[in-house]
Length: 189
Image (cartoon, rainbow, N blue to C red; front, side, top):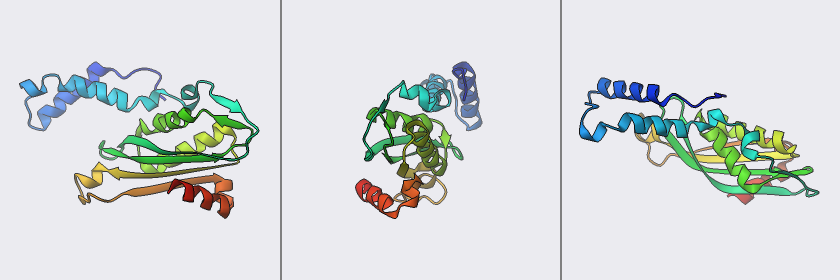
C-alpha cells in the first residue's frame, strides 16, 4: 500500500512524453491539458493502493445473532487490467453467512472498490474480495462471483466484443457445502 498520493506532476510529464512518442503534438489545443487530466484520472482509478478494507469499513462491523446468508448483488465494478492498462467492467456479487458479525451493506461495495481501484486481473480481484470479507466478518462462508468485459479483449488482440469473463471464489461453507454454494449461485443469477 502506498502511503502517499502519487506525484501528479511526474505522471503528467510521463503522459506528455507518451503523447510525443505516439506521434502526437502535446501542445495542440485538444491535448494541452490532457497530461494533467490523465494524471488526475489515474490517481483516482488507482486509489485502492492507498486504502485498506479496514479503513473503508470505518467501524461498520456490527454484532448480530443472525446466521443467515447475506448477499449484495450487482455491484458495478470498474478496474484496470494490469497487462494493458485498459479498463474492464461488469458486476460483482458478494455473499456471506454471518457468524456473529455483519458488515454495513454499503461497505461491501466499498470493499469491492478498494480492490478494484488497483491494477488488477479479474481472478485475483475476486479472491481478494472474498478473503477480505471473510477476514472482516469471520463469516462461516463467503462467495464472490464476478462477470466482466475486458477492453483488452474487445479493442485489441482477439477483438471479441461479446466475450464475458466469469470468476468465482468460494470459501468456508460455500466451498465445502454443495447446498450452500447452490443456494448462493441461484440467488445471484
